[in-house]
Amino acid sequence: MARLATVSALETYLKAEHPAVTFIGLLDEDADRPAEGGTFVAIQYPVSDAEQASLGAPGSNVYRHTGTIRLVVNQKRAVANAREAAVTMCDTLAASLRGKDISGVLTFAPTDPVFDDRNEDGLYQVFSFSTPFQHDLIG
Image (tube, rainbow, N blue to C red; front, top):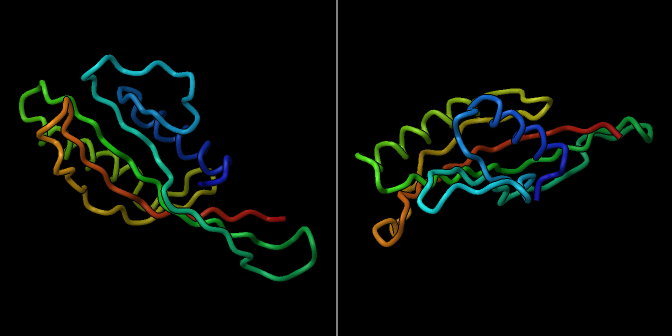
């Protein structure tokens, strides 16, 4: 699980960059969910780690937090070309995360979207991709 400062920076950035997209992230516990079948993007942090990146005087060391932000695009099926719409949204979101400094959180190259092979059974076309991140803290 990513640190709260990292989560806050990433989720605030994504929502500001894409105001028309419904995001459901860690900080959205009480947020309204889209109506059944409504398109939304889930924000997840499946991988995270921390290490001391420097040695020095106490209070001046760098602690490096690394991990992955995973965006899961849930595109409602009841639109024309739902798969294409889902991949287009993945591409747009990936471009906004590629090689950025987001309030001190560095992001790197996003993966290509992955198609969920259970898509034929539900209300959504589900695609996801991940972007590695790094966030240094001094302490």
